[in-house]
Length: 456
Picture 1 (cartoon, rainbow, N blue to C red):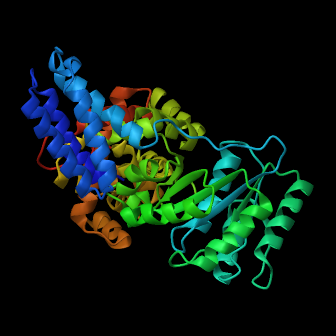
Picture 2: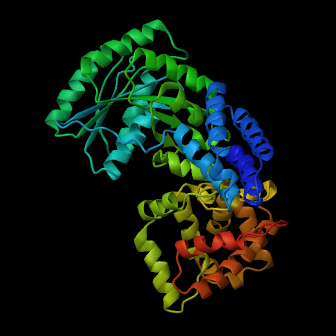
């Protein structure tokens, strides 16, 4: 999310910080560039207007014009205002004093509601250590009920069954009763969606809301729909007392207009974002961290949290001990590092959170993607255990066999072995080993241009 916007802002910020003095004219020039960048990101026009107006008022003050570092002062103003339109502060879920807390999830069909219900349930179970029960009141789509049942079973979440011949309010009330019996902390209710907002749907969800009196009413919206997301959020907000928004499919949204428009339009905070298709690709929305990411400053806090939450510490320590004992880092270890990266959302997610990487040329970014890493995994998995442990054995005929087994070319096998050789040398220097140390060196390993060769 925000890839194209971040690219534009990176150039704007560089232009600012490179100036020793700012005038009223070049401040206005900068604001014009910001305005165009926001409009191209599909940010709602009223939001863009109020944002530019606030930045301009502060930027033309004495603090910026008379500052010894005016570029940095203006960058800080832009960052603070971006944080403000994203919601200013992280909005946490409100939990009821008397369990179970009831969370009602609403939204249009296709926005990712059912998947979000399970992602949220898993998040609350894993991070919040809560016992969660989920149910579906979507009596119009048997597939939605089946999907929820299947996902709940896969993630070991309590599930209350429902069917298409039941009343939605009755399903929800019985699910709450069941949650009390099972001593659940939270009940999440999936509601029916339509392809568009209609009166019948709104009346049904109003009745459901009045009947269960949820503590949280979350609106799920597809971020890829841009300004349409804001229009539907408005319609639901008029009908229901929404407490927050969940943005889905943010991994496919390079612009980010919905995220930058929701708060100022309906004054309801974005509480979570779905960052991919996998059940664990779900995060708390932190406005300030997102603002720094947009400006190319990275998001090291989120990256460190990912390492602690998603990396298998035992496996990481095993690699570290192996290297400390003087043993060689082999392709089996390399495969393990790729798996660990995958748990963190893939290389694209990691790179987006590293500071200073907004300036990496587009051609290089296109080479560093998760598809490339999947190909690398396929190549290693096509090797024998002996070849993984002793890569020097891999010569002509072996390379051809590995390429054929992984559906790649011999040149790609050669490239992987070359990249592995670089990582092996780097790991020797690191001694302590592990992915975190490799990641710390990633930024310094990126060349300013030309062919991109991964250090690992």
